[in-house]
Length: 260
Ligand SMILES: Nc1ncnc2c1ncn2[C@@H]1O[C@H](COP(=O)(O)OP(=O)(O)OP(=O)(O)O)[C@@H](O)[C@H]1O
Ligand SMILES: [Mg+2]
Image 1 (cartoon, rainbow, N blue to C red):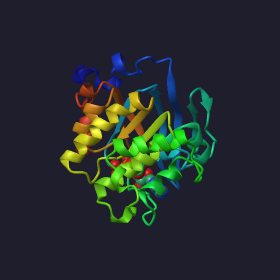
Image 2: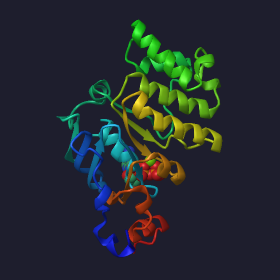
Image 3: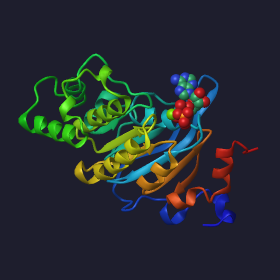
């Protein structure tokens, strides 16, 4: 795609998820204001089943706010959200989590004084009464994430990279259909980021899960994502193939902070 076609703000060939009829999550016209400030000014998002959608944009463009709206952490001023064909616009975050919308946080929100195992039990909503199948699932997750040997360790004592993994394990414990990852690579070193990429790519097949991936590590986002969506000042600038995003003049300008 050439710069000249940037005005449309779209890459039509990949603007829609593959298998576009099977959308696991949709957001339409999401508006979120904080006092006088409009953080999201009518944002749409479509996530296909098993798709990985990279959500990128400069600081303050509205990425976390959108995830907060999708996961039920924020009420919003206008718009509709559906999950697996059902409207969840007004559903609480607990109902959305139970329905299969799971998330991690830009800054990990773990119970630091509890063990890895206990943190994950909270994520699986099992309230201490896990079935054998659930226990097997959690053990497999712990093993896959390299956390098995430290499952009885208090989270506060783990290195930061492992705390990030605990968050992902907790998010996957409830067998979500949608995983919202808010800057999972922040604070990770190169080797840890490479492992994270492998994990994200596996998730869809091993866990039948689609993902929205927010990160400032462009190499990670470009490698992991089927499509990317670019936000700037609470508006969608681009949706399409990862390789095309930075061929758009307005996307480059947004990142350079010279949209005037
Ligand atoms: N709880 C809040 N109260 C008031 N304003 C907020 C709140 N959360 C976000 N905002 C504002 O909404 C806008 C979007 O913020 P948001 O955190 O969604 O950006 P972001 O794209 O996630 O940025 P970053 O890449 O820095 O994480 C910003 O102007 C921010 O100041
Ligand atoms: Mg953010």
